[in-house]
Image 1: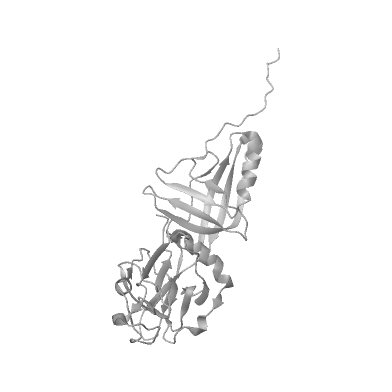
Image 2: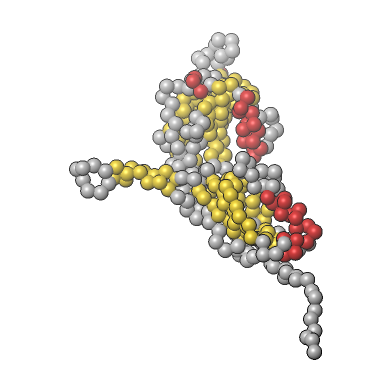
Length: 332
């Protein structure tokens, strides 16, 4: 007597994407603008155990040794590129849509087009890490169209190793100039001085919430001259920034330039100004060589509020803006 048998096609069970970190949302924004939820909430992409990159990154210590003493003297450190490792599970419950989901995600992984990893804490604050795809491997237990999921090990590199917080933008200005003691300087009557509250410029301070030092970008608008001091740094602007123009001084060691551009149009929201200025700087007028001889670029120290030494001469609005992006060791 023969034994009965049944012919059947193997069916892979639907596998949930993975566990969700309670209260924490993690996303990947590709170069193409697409946003992928890595927390497992979307049901398409999720982390498996073993993610690396959220914690402190690697550092390179520098020390000096001499024959006159034992051991060595620590001279400082340098944060190096951060390696990021993502064990991912890509899932789509619709077999016919799985290939499109897979293709769309991998379109964001190109070696010449980095994306942004964002981690949002339960209190709503976010930190970002700009990452570049460095390599990957895959694991298909069955044909992906049958499984509706696949495991990938993705390696990325963050050339800027710091997790970045929300940009900080502070602005100070003086009142428009008015003739000293009522004199009319246009007609030549009265000394060439202007009354100005000066209170906001004189009392300016800024707080760097970062774990480390950061570099400031200064904007100077409508001033005959300016002096910008923060911590150990000072930028001297001995020339005029005409009305309707903006001088952008980037103190970052990789840049360190002073570029004059047209100021953002009236009515531009303050939050939208940095993007507008960044787009205009490449076509601006380079005035770096005209900065004062006492100019010294230096980073803004972290921790307590730092008093600024700001002055802007002339009869105009004399607005000074400081921008920087906080830097942190960890994702939260």
